[in-house]
Image (cartoon, rainbow, N blue to C red; front, side, top):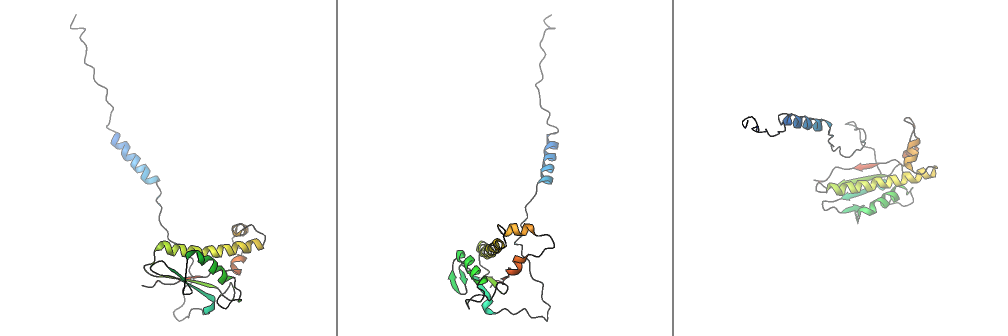
Length: 184
């Protein structure tokens, strides 16, 4: 009887790992397919149409152009005067809203042009800060114009425009920004 009561050696429990590689592969494929990758799109700007070869660029009176230069060291010059990035917004607003009062600034908002020129060695961050200040000057002027028309701000005004409606504020104060080729 002793032979019958002998304990059988118990097999140890194992976790089947044969399909583990398949599961890992499927998870990898799932995450590759569902993940979105951000692609840098650059700075979105609407460029004017290209001129014909025999066509001259439209003349711009010196008075109507506000020149902003950013050198390789990141220094900002507004009309050849050293300035800070924070001063750009107020200078641009003065230039656009001058309406012929000061001979150093534009004759009217429709004729005002802001020219930005950089050096090849200018840091991208500095260039973006300068461009942002110029755009913020325009947005502040558009906000003020929208408030004159009875809207809380420019975005509220734009929300009321249909796809075929003309933006009257942008006709009164058009954004005319010239980004010149960098000096190399």
